[in-house]
Image 1 (tube, rainbow, N blue to C red):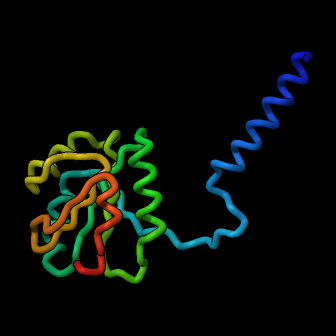
Image 2 (image 1 turned 45 degrees about the vertical axis):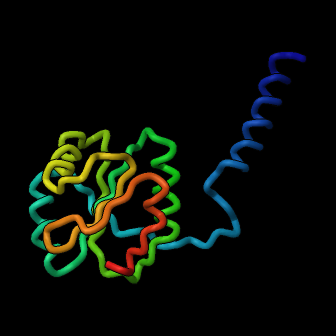
Length: 141
């Protein structure tokens, strides 16, 4: 087989894999996305605590390099009910390691990734990591 034929064969196979693993599907209905607020500063933690007196605050800690974290986030976003009245904060752990440590310290919750924290009246009332995140019924909060 010539080099050109090998390259064509590789491209054909990659196209096959792209179809299998792609997020693009013709029969998927486009669902509106979660109204994430980027969590990037320690002062936002004060806001979360203050706002949690009147409205439930949710923090999703995500590692952008972790396949498990990416899978859990995808499942979470697909199942999320946009009618819930929650403030949704998203923390990119790789960009905000120190902030993640401050969250663990302030809320007295051991750091994990991925991790979901639910804050009401200034305290974490529920938290979960990995696959347990998607078993939480956010409507209960």
